[in-house]
Length: 217
Image (cartoon, rainbow, N blue to C red; front, side):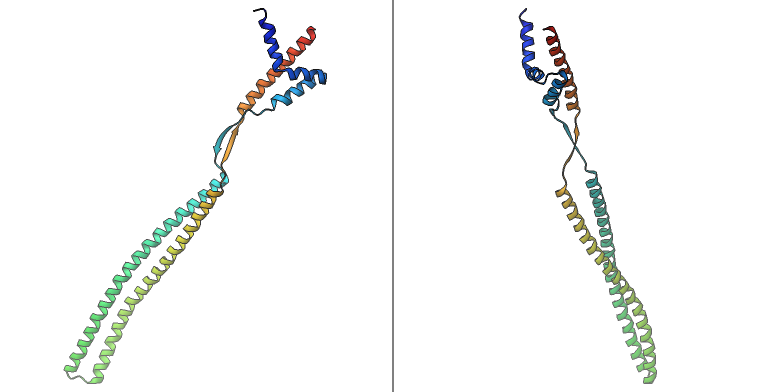
Protein backbone atom coordinates (compact mmCIF):
# COMPACT_ATOMS: atom_id res chain seq x y z
CA UNK A 1 0.00 0.00 0.00
CA UNK A 2 2.95 2.28 0.70
CA UNK A 3 4.16 1.94 -2.86
CA UNK A 4 0.72 2.66 -4.37
CA UNK A 5 0.93 6.42 -4.07
CA UNK A 6 4.23 6.87 -5.93
CA UNK A 7 2.98 4.59 -8.72
CA UNK A 8 -0.27 6.56 -8.99
CA UNK A 9 1.64 9.81 -9.09
CA UNK A 10 3.94 8.30 -11.71
CA UNK A 11 0.96 7.41 -13.92
CA UNK A 12 -0.45 10.94 -13.48
CA UNK A 13 2.84 12.47 -14.63
CA UNK A 14 3.06 9.93 -17.45
CA UNK A 15 -0.29 11.13 -18.82
CA UNK A 16 0.80 14.76 -18.74
CA UNK A 17 4.49 14.31 -19.49
CA UNK A 18 4.22 16.75 -22.39
CA UNK A 19 3.10 19.41 -19.94
CA UNK A 20 6.14 18.93 -17.71
CA UNK A 21 8.54 18.97 -20.67
CA UNK A 22 6.88 22.06 -22.00
CA UNK A 23 7.42 23.80 -18.68
CA UNK A 24 11.16 23.15 -18.71
CA UNK A 25 11.50 24.18 -22.31
CA UNK A 26 9.31 27.29 -22.17
CA UNK A 27 10.42 28.26 -18.67
CA UNK A 28 7.19 29.52 -17.16
CA UNK A 29 3.78 28.56 -15.90
CA UNK A 30 1.94 30.94 -18.23
CA UNK A 31 3.74 29.45 -21.23
CA UNK A 32 2.99 25.94 -19.95
CA UNK A 33 -0.69 26.81 -19.73
CA UNK A 34 -0.65 27.94 -23.37
CA UNK A 35 0.87 24.63 -24.48
CA UNK A 36 -1.71 22.64 -22.54
CA UNK A 37 -4.61 24.62 -24.01
CA UNK A 38 -3.19 24.25 -27.50
CA UNK A 39 -2.87 20.48 -27.16
CA UNK A 40 -6.08 19.52 -25.42
CA UNK A 41 -8.74 22.19 -24.88
CA UNK A 42 -9.43 22.84 -28.56
CA UNK A 43 -10.36 19.22 -29.20
CA UNK A 44 -13.91 18.92 -30.57
CA UNK A 45 -15.81 16.28 -28.65
CA UNK A 46 -18.76 16.30 -31.01
CA UNK A 47 -22.02 18.12 -31.51
CA UNK A 48 -25.57 16.86 -31.32
CA UNK A 49 -27.31 17.42 -34.67
CA UNK A 50 -31.03 18.12 -34.96
CA UNK A 51 -32.65 18.42 -38.38
CA UNK A 52 -34.33 21.82 -38.83
CA UNK A 53 -36.58 23.24 -41.52
CA UNK A 54 -35.12 25.68 -44.03
CA UNK A 55 -37.45 28.65 -43.54
CA UNK A 56 -37.00 30.08 -47.03
CA UNK A 57 -37.58 26.73 -48.70
CA UNK A 58 -40.57 26.10 -46.44
CA UNK A 59 -42.10 29.46 -47.40
CA UNK A 60 -41.59 28.74 -51.09
CA UNK A 61 -43.05 25.24 -50.76
CA UNK A 62 -46.06 26.54 -48.81
CA UNK A 63 -46.75 29.19 -51.46
CA UNK A 64 -46.51 26.62 -54.26
CA UNK A 65 -48.74 24.13 -52.45
CA UNK A 66 -51.34 26.83 -51.80
CA UNK A 67 -51.20 27.85 -55.45
CA UNK A 68 -51.62 24.23 -56.50
CA UNK A 69 -54.65 23.79 -54.23
CA UNK A 70 -56.20 26.97 -55.64
CA UNK A 71 -55.61 25.85 -59.24
CA UNK A 72 -57.14 22.46 -58.54
CA UNK A 73 -60.18 24.12 -57.00
CA UNK A 74 -60.52 26.44 -60.00
CA UNK A 75 -60.11 23.52 -62.39
CA UNK A 76 -62.86 21.55 -60.69
CA UNK A 77 -65.16 24.59 -60.75
CA UNK A 78 -64.48 25.29 -64.44
CA UNK A 79 -65.03 21.62 -65.28
CA UNK A 80 -68.36 21.67 -63.46
CA UNK A 81 -69.49 24.80 -65.32
CA UNK A 82 -68.36 23.32 -68.62
CA UNK A 83 -70.27 20.10 -68.07
CA UNK A 84 -73.39 22.02 -67.01
CA UNK A 85 -73.17 24.29 -70.09
CA UNK A 86 -72.68 21.28 -72.37
CA UNK A 87 -75.77 19.54 -71.01
CA UNK A 88 -77.84 22.75 -71.18
CA UNK A 89 -76.71 23.50 -74.73
CA UNK A 90 -77.61 20.01 -75.91
CA UNK A 91 -81.04 20.22 -74.31
CA UNK A 92 -81.82 23.66 -75.75
CA UNK A 93 -80.67 22.61 -79.22
CA UNK A 94 -83.11 19.73 -79.15
CA UNK A 95 -85.86 22.04 -77.92
CA UNK A 96 -85.10 24.67 -80.59
CA UNK A 97 -85.08 22.05 -83.33
CA UNK A 98 -88.36 20.52 -82.16
CA UNK A 99 -89.95 23.98 -81.81
CA UNK A 100 -88.84 24.96 -85.29
CA UNK A 101 -90.28 21.80 -86.81
CA UNK A 102 -93.59 22.37 -85.03
CA UNK A 103 -93.86 26.04 -86.08
CA UNK A 104 -92.97 25.42 -89.72
CA UNK A 105 -95.31 22.47 -89.91
CA UNK A 106 -98.11 24.72 -88.66
CA UNK A 107 -97.11 27.38 -91.22
CA UNK A 108 -97.38 24.91 -94.08
CA UNK A 109 -100.74 23.71 -92.83
CA UNK A 110 -101.96 27.32 -92.68
CA UNK A 111 -100.79 27.98 -96.21
CA UNK A 112 -102.62 24.87 -97.52
CA UNK A 113 -105.78 25.92 -95.65
CA UNK A 114 -105.72 29.39 -97.18
CA UNK A 115 -105.25 27.98 -100.66
CA UNK A 116 -108.15 25.57 -100.14
CA UNK A 117 -110.32 28.53 -99.12
CA UNK A 118 -109.57 30.11 -102.52
CA UNK A 119 -107.75 33.09 -101.07
CA UNK A 120 -105.88 35.24 -103.54
CA UNK A 121 -102.19 34.39 -103.93
CA UNK A 122 -100.95 37.80 -102.79
CA UNK A 123 -103.09 37.52 -99.66
CA UNK A 124 -101.71 34.04 -98.93
CA UNK A 125 -98.12 35.16 -99.50
CA UNK A 126 -98.54 38.22 -97.25
CA UNK A 127 -99.96 36.20 -94.35
CA UNK A 128 -97.42 33.43 -94.71
CA UNK A 129 -94.60 35.99 -94.80
CA UNK A 130 -95.83 37.64 -91.62
CA UNK A 131 -96.20 34.30 -89.85
CA UNK A 132 -92.74 33.19 -90.99
CA UNK A 133 -91.17 36.41 -89.63
CA UNK A 134 -92.75 35.78 -86.23
CA UNK A 135 -91.53 32.18 -86.26
CA UNK A 136 -87.98 33.24 -87.22
CA UNK A 137 -87.91 35.84 -84.43
CA UNK A 138 -88.97 33.26 -81.84
CA UNK A 139 -86.43 30.71 -83.06
CA UNK A 140 -83.71 33.37 -83.31
CA UNK A 141 -84.18 34.20 -79.61
CA UNK A 142 -83.82 30.50 -78.74
CA UNK A 143 -80.64 30.13 -80.80
CA UNK A 144 -79.11 33.31 -79.39
CA UNK A 145 -79.43 31.85 -75.93
CA UNK A 146 -77.77 28.66 -77.15
CA UNK A 147 -74.90 30.65 -78.69
CA UNK A 148 -74.32 32.51 -75.42
CA UNK A 149 -74.17 29.21 -73.55
CA UNK A 150 -71.74 27.83 -76.14
CA UNK A 151 -69.51 30.88 -75.64
CA UNK A 152 -69.41 30.32 -71.88
CA UNK A 153 -68.76 26.64 -72.51
CA UNK A 154 -65.77 27.51 -74.69
CA UNK A 155 -64.42 29.93 -72.06
CA UNK A 156 -64.63 27.30 -69.32
CA UNK A 157 -62.87 24.79 -71.57
CA UNK A 158 -59.99 27.20 -72.16
CA UNK A 159 -59.85 27.95 -68.41
CA UNK A 160 -59.54 24.22 -67.68
CA UNK A 161 -56.64 23.96 -70.13
CA UNK A 162 -54.88 26.99 -68.59
CA UNK A 163 -55.37 25.79 -65.02
CA UNK A 164 -54.09 22.30 -65.89
CA UNK A 165 -51.04 23.80 -67.59
CA UNK A 166 -50.31 25.97 -64.55
CA UNK A 167 -50.72 22.94 -62.27
CA UNK A 168 -48.05 21.10 -64.26
CA UNK A 169 -45.74 24.11 -63.91
CA UNK A 170 -46.29 24.27 -60.14
CA UNK A 171 -45.68 20.53 -59.78
CA UNK A 172 -42.41 20.86 -61.71
CA UNK A 173 -41.42 23.76 -59.44
CA UNK A 174 -42.11 21.61 -56.36
CA UNK A 175 -40.01 18.77 -57.81
CA UNK A 176 -37.13 21.16 -58.55
CA UNK A 177 -37.38 22.57 -55.03
CA UNK A 178 -37.23 19.08 -53.52
CA UNK A 179 -34.25 18.06 -55.67
CA UNK A 180 -32.24 21.19 -54.79
CA UNK A 181 -33.16 21.31 -51.11
CA UNK A 182 -30.32 20.62 -48.69
CA UNK A 183 -31.01 19.14 -45.29
CA UNK A 184 -30.07 21.60 -42.55
CA UNK A 185 -29.11 20.80 -38.97
CA UNK A 186 -29.04 22.72 -35.70
CA UNK A 187 -25.85 22.01 -33.75
CA UNK A 188 -25.96 21.52 -29.99
CA UNK A 189 -22.45 22.14 -28.59
CA UNK A 190 -23.35 21.75 -24.91
CA UNK A 191 -21.39 18.49 -24.74
CA UNK A 192 -18.28 20.18 -26.07
CA UNK A 193 -18.69 23.08 -23.65
CA UNK A 194 -18.95 20.69 -20.68
CA UNK A 195 -15.81 18.86 -21.82
CA UNK A 196 -13.96 22.16 -22.16
CA UNK A 197 -14.86 23.16 -18.60
CA UNK A 198 -13.69 19.77 -17.32
CA UNK A 199 -10.40 20.05 -19.17
CA UNK A 200 -9.76 23.54 -17.87
CA UNK A 201 -10.28 22.24 -14.36
CA UNK A 202 -7.93 19.32 -15.10
CA UNK A 203 -5.28 21.69 -16.48
CA UNK A 204 -5.44 23.76 -13.31
CA UNK A 205 -5.01 20.60 -11.26
CA UNK A 206 -1.94 19.55 -13.28
CA UNK A 207 -0.43 23.01 -13.00
CA UNK A 208 -0.96 22.97 -9.23
CA UNK A 209 0.61 19.48 -8.99
CA UNK A 210 3.65 20.55 -11.06
CA UNK A 211 4.09 23.71 -8.99
CA UNK A 212 3.78 21.74 -5.76
CA UNK A 213 6.46 19.24 -6.77
CA UNK A 214 8.81 21.98 -7.96
CA UNK A 215 8.46 23.91 -4.71
CA UNK A 216 8.96 20.69 -2.71
CA UNK A 217 12.30 20.12 -4.39
